[in-house]
Length: 582
Ligand code: ADP
Ligand code: MG
Image (tube, rainbow, N blue to C red):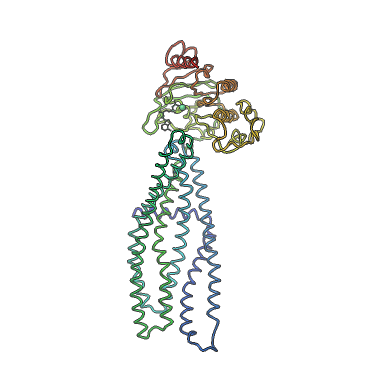
């Protein structure tokens, strides 16, 4: 019974999304019901025709019935239009609302959420699952409202003609209901797996598209093709299972119906022979019974759609209900000085420990460089400042205020960030620099930031200058150009805390030197956290912190660390050697 109440909760929740459009929805239901309520008129006209007009003399021919027929279909046409268009309008709006809701929720989710899922899996929720829900809901509402009214109207008409025969038809109900219930659970479970496999198809395709160069260079075609083949084969198998099960159960249901109708005909013929039914009654009764079949058939298969829709709705609401980033406290942060303090900070991804009770104090306006072997935890450490991840133990303070008591927006407004993986948007160069909240800034400031990050150097050679579109994720730019764009974006933000995570790694020595000059000027009056591989770029930092295996192994100025002859001095000597080799 637990799953039944779960289904009910899901229906109600879906219904609540249709609530703002209830007027339209009601009109559509009304149209449907009116359409369905006129279904019995056809056999009734037939009955009249057979009993009263068929054998009539030539002189008494009437055009009443044919005209009534045309009028009937004219009315039904209008009703059908209202029902279909109204329902589609509601469905499309609900789809739009759901997608909007999902998208807003998705961009509010914490970084950890995205580590666990592929983009394809998420995209499939927006496309496949939402469409499934809308289709299923439209189909089910149509069938449940229209077909049950049709069935009721026809049954009432049948009872009116001959109640004994109608009663017999009603006896057929229970066995059919029993059959439907048996099929229900199985179909639901299969639909859920079908959705999962569609997500897998998307995931593999997107990876292959995103990594098409690596696929080519490393000869990954066979591997990707095999992976994709497996995914689509799974999708096919699940789809076939759903189809096969529903195809196998439908005929079983219909057999029961056919059996009943056969018996009903025998009874009807006996009634006719006994004189309690006219020819018209008989023809009309058989016609109406035959007309009962399609709606009954649709009603018996409605469950497949219902279950499919519910499974997709579960997937959608799963995303909508995913807890958003903890909003933090409500302490504002105006004119932050940028003093940072890490107190006994420990961080783990799942059960993988990457930072271990780390303590560090960074004075306002200080430039601190982080160096050390890759995988040591440098990125993880700086990611704690904008609260991309929340430490399992310890805390991070800005100007003496724990970051988890700060308003998330206020915290992030105080930070400019150039990440390890530069992400650009499919837009113009200008809009990529003046991104998000920066869009409102005056053009001169955007151009000044572009000049400081040496973006202007390559923009002048571009066909439309700053208005040149750069393609999906800046595909039409070189690695160094991408980094310069990201740096310009960070410079434009002019925040008290600047985080540069290997932000100049893709630059050539010359551009790097020039950007370093710009950054050197920029460091004045703000706190800088710089992760760098090339040690030559951080010699000027106020302090250098060496991180290995999630711990600080030593810290000091360049000079101090060289004199000490520890980990940093060794790293430095190594890089000097390889530099001299070149
Ligand atoms: P660094 O920047 O010093 O190279 P990172 O902070 O990126 O090091 O990574 C530290 C460790 O944490 C690595 O071993 C890496 O595999 C792991 N790691 C980094 N990011 C994640 C993540 N989002 N989920 C799980 N493990 C991660
Ligand atoms: Mg890193």
